[in-house]
Length: 195
Image (cartoon, rainbow, N blue to C red; front, side, top):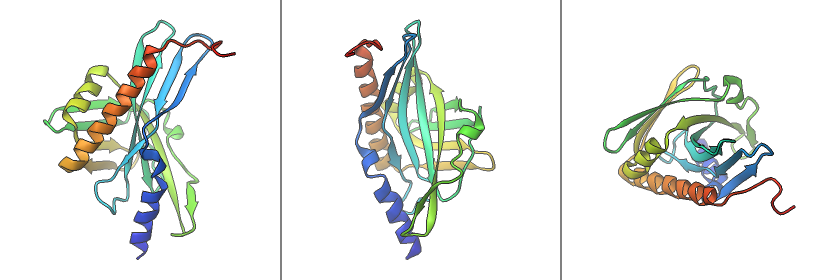
Protein backbone atom coordinates (compact mmCIF):
# COMPACT_ATOMS: atom_id res chain seq x y z
CA UNK A 1 0.00 0.00 0.00
CA UNK A 2 2.80 2.39 0.89
CA UNK A 3 4.46 1.80 -2.49
CA UNK A 4 1.16 2.56 -4.25
CA UNK A 5 0.75 5.81 -2.27
CA UNK A 6 4.30 6.84 -3.12
CA UNK A 7 3.76 6.20 -6.83
CA UNK A 8 0.43 8.04 -6.74
CA UNK A 9 1.94 11.03 -4.93
CA UNK A 10 4.79 11.26 -7.46
CA UNK A 11 2.34 10.96 -10.36
CA UNK A 12 -0.11 13.56 -9.11
CA UNK A 13 2.59 16.02 -8.08
CA UNK A 14 3.71 16.28 -11.68
CA UNK A 15 0.38 16.63 -13.50
CA UNK A 16 1.00 20.33 -14.01
CA UNK A 17 4.46 19.62 -15.45
CA UNK A 18 3.00 17.85 -18.50
CA UNK A 19 1.66 21.02 -20.14
CA UNK A 20 4.24 22.36 -22.60
CA UNK A 21 4.90 26.09 -22.29
CA UNK A 22 7.67 28.62 -22.22
CA UNK A 23 8.23 29.24 -18.51
CA UNK A 24 11.05 31.78 -18.80
CA UNK A 25 11.94 34.29 -21.50
CA UNK A 26 14.30 36.85 -20.02
CA UNK A 27 16.47 39.41 -21.77
CA UNK A 28 19.42 40.89 -19.90
CA UNK A 29 20.73 44.41 -20.32
CA UNK A 30 23.81 43.11 -22.20
CA UNK A 31 21.46 41.66 -24.84
CA UNK A 32 21.82 38.02 -23.81
CA UNK A 33 18.61 36.05 -23.45
CA UNK A 34 17.52 32.83 -21.76
CA UNK A 35 14.42 30.88 -22.76
CA UNK A 36 13.19 27.79 -20.94
CA UNK A 37 10.36 25.30 -21.34
CA UNK A 38 8.55 23.59 -18.52
CA UNK A 39 9.42 19.98 -17.77
CA UNK A 40 7.98 16.66 -18.85
CA UNK A 41 8.21 13.68 -16.49
CA UNK A 42 8.86 10.20 -17.87
CA UNK A 43 8.69 7.06 -15.76
CA UNK A 44 10.08 3.71 -16.85
CA UNK A 45 7.07 2.08 -15.12
CA UNK A 46 4.35 3.10 -12.65
CA UNK A 47 6.52 2.35 -9.61
CA UNK A 48 9.67 4.06 -10.94
CA UNK A 49 11.54 5.42 -7.89
CA UNK A 50 13.74 7.81 -9.90
CA UNK A 51 11.60 9.30 -12.67
CA UNK A 52 13.37 11.84 -14.87
CA UNK A 53 11.97 15.24 -15.79
CA UNK A 54 13.12 16.65 -19.15
CA UNK A 55 13.08 20.27 -20.27
CA UNK A 56 14.97 22.43 -22.77
CA UNK A 57 16.64 25.82 -22.45
CA UNK A 58 18.30 28.09 -24.95
CA UNK A 59 20.76 30.86 -24.24
CA UNK A 60 21.38 33.61 -26.77
CA UNK A 61 24.79 35.19 -26.29
CA UNK A 62 25.50 38.90 -26.67
CA UNK A 63 26.98 38.07 -30.10
CA UNK A 64 23.68 36.44 -31.13
CA UNK A 65 24.68 32.76 -31.18
CA UNK A 66 22.33 30.26 -29.56
CA UNK A 67 23.34 27.50 -27.15
CA UNK A 68 20.88 24.72 -26.32
CA UNK A 69 20.69 22.85 -23.00
CA UNK A 70 18.97 19.62 -22.04
CA UNK A 71 17.86 19.92 -18.43
CA UNK A 72 17.18 16.73 -16.50
CA UNK A 73 15.83 16.52 -12.99
CA UNK A 74 15.71 13.39 -10.85
CA UNK A 75 12.66 13.11 -8.62
CA UNK A 76 13.40 10.69 -5.81
CA UNK A 77 13.09 9.89 -2.11
CA UNK A 78 16.90 10.17 -2.06
CA UNK A 79 18.94 13.31 -2.58
CA UNK A 80 21.39 12.98 -5.47
CA UNK A 81 24.39 15.11 -6.34
CA UNK A 82 25.16 15.29 -10.04
CA UNK A 83 28.86 16.08 -10.47
CA UNK A 84 30.06 18.96 -12.60
CA UNK A 85 31.25 17.40 -15.88
CA UNK A 86 29.28 14.26 -14.98
CA UNK A 87 28.33 12.30 -18.07
CA UNK A 88 24.87 11.88 -19.56
CA UNK A 89 24.56 9.11 -22.17
CA UNK A 90 21.54 9.09 -24.46
CA UNK A 91 20.85 6.11 -26.71
CA UNK A 92 18.42 6.82 -29.52
CA UNK A 93 15.97 4.26 -30.83
CA UNK A 94 18.38 3.72 -33.75
CA UNK A 95 21.21 2.95 -31.27
CA UNK A 96 23.16 6.19 -31.83
CA UNK A 97 24.81 7.35 -28.60
CA UNK A 98 25.00 11.02 -27.62
CA UNK A 99 27.24 12.09 -24.76
CA UNK A 100 26.85 15.34 -22.81
CA UNK A 101 28.62 16.75 -19.75
CA UNK A 102 26.85 18.38 -16.81
CA UNK A 103 27.53 22.12 -16.58
CA UNK A 104 26.40 23.25 -13.10
CA UNK A 105 28.63 23.11 -10.05
CA UNK A 106 27.99 19.88 -8.14
CA UNK A 107 26.60 21.48 -4.98
CA UNK A 108 23.98 23.37 -7.03
CA UNK A 109 22.43 20.13 -8.32
CA UNK A 110 21.49 18.62 -4.95
CA UNK A 111 18.14 19.08 -3.15
CA UNK A 112 19.13 18.41 0.46
CA UNK A 113 15.86 19.36 2.18
CA UNK A 114 13.28 18.09 -0.31
CA UNK A 115 9.52 18.56 -0.17
CA UNK A 116 7.67 16.73 2.58
CA UNK A 117 4.58 14.76 1.45
CA UNK A 118 2.42 14.03 4.55
CA UNK A 119 0.33 11.38 2.76
CA UNK A 120 3.34 9.08 2.48
CA UNK A 121 5.33 10.53 5.40
CA UNK A 122 8.37 11.03 3.14
CA UNK A 123 10.33 13.82 1.51
CA UNK A 124 10.69 13.97 -2.25
CA UNK A 125 13.95 15.43 -3.54
CA UNK A 126 14.46 16.94 -6.99
CA UNK A 127 18.07 17.14 -8.18
CA UNK A 128 18.64 19.31 -11.27
CA UNK A 129 21.31 19.00 -13.96
CA UNK A 130 21.96 21.04 -17.10
CA UNK A 131 23.72 19.59 -20.14
CA UNK A 132 24.84 21.65 -23.14
CA UNK A 133 23.73 19.82 -26.29
CA UNK A 134 24.36 20.69 -29.92
CA UNK A 135 21.39 21.55 -32.08
CA UNK A 136 22.23 18.61 -34.37
CA UNK A 137 22.24 16.16 -31.43
CA UNK A 138 18.94 17.60 -30.24
CA UNK A 139 17.47 17.17 -33.71
CA UNK A 140 18.72 13.56 -33.74
CA UNK A 141 16.95 12.88 -30.42
CA UNK A 142 13.76 14.44 -31.81
CA UNK A 143 13.99 12.47 -35.06
CA UNK A 144 14.89 9.06 -33.59
CA UNK A 145 13.54 9.18 -30.02
CA UNK A 146 15.23 8.13 -26.77
CA UNK A 147 15.56 4.45 -25.91
CA UNK A 148 17.83 4.70 -22.87
CA UNK A 149 19.47 7.31 -20.66
CA UNK A 150 22.36 6.87 -18.22
CA UNK A 151 22.93 9.74 -15.82
CA UNK A 152 26.05 9.90 -13.67
CA UNK A 153 25.50 10.90 -10.04
CA UNK A 154 28.00 11.14 -7.23
CA UNK A 155 27.66 7.57 -5.94
CA UNK A 156 25.83 5.64 -8.66
CA UNK A 157 24.63 5.80 -12.25
CA UNK A 158 20.92 6.04 -12.91
CA UNK A 159 19.64 4.16 -15.96
CA UNK A 160 16.23 4.80 -17.46
CA UNK A 161 15.15 2.56 -20.31
CA UNK A 162 11.93 3.39 -22.16
CA UNK A 163 9.57 1.13 -24.06
CA UNK A 164 8.57 2.17 -27.59
CA UNK A 165 5.37 3.96 -26.47
CA UNK A 166 7.19 6.09 -23.87
CA UNK A 167 9.99 6.74 -26.34
CA UNK A 168 7.52 8.05 -28.93
CA UNK A 169 5.75 10.19 -26.34
CA UNK A 170 9.05 11.65 -25.08
CA UNK A 171 10.13 12.30 -28.67
CA UNK A 172 6.89 14.22 -29.32
CA UNK A 173 7.26 16.27 -26.12
CA UNK A 174 10.91 17.09 -26.93
CA UNK A 175 9.86 18.20 -30.41
CA UNK A 176 7.19 20.44 -28.90
CA UNK A 177 9.74 21.97 -26.50
CA UNK A 178 12.24 22.49 -29.34
CA UNK A 179 9.58 24.17 -31.51
CA UNK A 180 8.53 26.40 -28.61
CA UNK A 181 12.14 27.56 -28.23
CA UNK A 182 12.55 28.16 -31.97
CA UNK A 183 9.29 30.13 -32.16
CA UNK A 184 10.32 32.27 -29.19
CA UNK A 185 13.75 32.87 -30.76
CA UNK A 186 12.10 34.26 -33.92
CA UNK A 187 10.92 37.24 -31.90
CA UNK A 188 13.73 39.65 -31.05
CA UNK A 189 13.46 41.14 -27.58
CA UNK A 190 15.07 43.95 -25.65
CA UNK A 191 14.98 44.63 -21.91
CA UNK A 192 13.23 47.95 -22.63
CA UNK A 193 10.31 46.33 -24.51
CA UNK A 194 6.91 47.12 -23.01
CA UNK A 195 8.27 49.50 -20.37
